[in-house]
Image 1 (tube, rainbow, N blue to C red):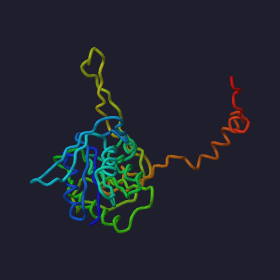
Image 2 (tube, one colour; image 1 turned 90 degrees about the vertical axis):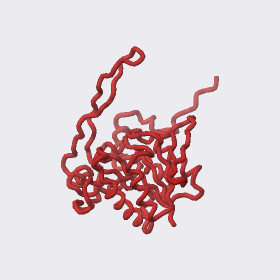
Image 3 (cartoon, rainbow, N blue to C red; image 1 turned 30 degrees about the vertical axis):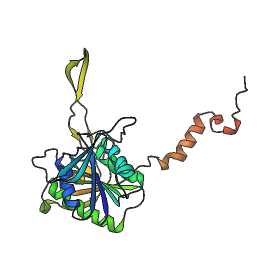
Image 4 (tube, rainbow, N blue to C red; image 1 turned 180 degrees about the horizontal axis):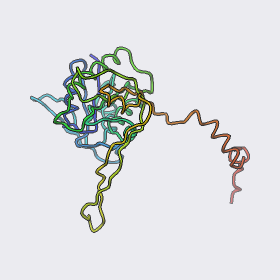
Length: 273
């Protein structure tokens, strides 16, 4: 059977990752490594020089997953370099509690875990569900769709350097109105820092978040697709270079900056003292 690595940022005890494990283990040999605690919003942080404890999770004496005291990216790194005897054919991160659309992609540990898989050269996907309420979350629907996508990727592959960011509406199978290959929108969380009790004599604040703003314009933006009860699939890459701007920026800098900056041959070493 194919090998699939699963991780997340909500932590190993989150219902989304267990629903995903139960579904994906039907089609592949699964290695599950996830943070031991909630790490949402941690982005692509990694732990350097820290001791990361590893916990086995068992059911009826059988190991079904590992909790690592680290970040989502740590979990993927550890699984690939240390835990797994053979590399995965696919990395899946999720199922996240709440959508990861628009600017939240940059903060998301869910997306970061998938990005880490992409950086290793493995086909990778991030999967999120459009609700923050576990009591009504349809993780079963999201898990079934993810298994279908996983089978397709295992058969056909993905282009190198690309991961899929998948957001699934929190509705029944029958209520899903389609699948759209979308693009990253402009939505973002508004920050709201609430004063807390002083800590060690110093002022303390907690970012409790505010409203989520919506994208304007293009109906193919990921958040607008999700709002229509459609599944949003956005291909992401992590070359952040603005290639179209390089020539314009070069001309602008040559116009406004001394040419010597660009003529490295003119730079002479300082005389030895």
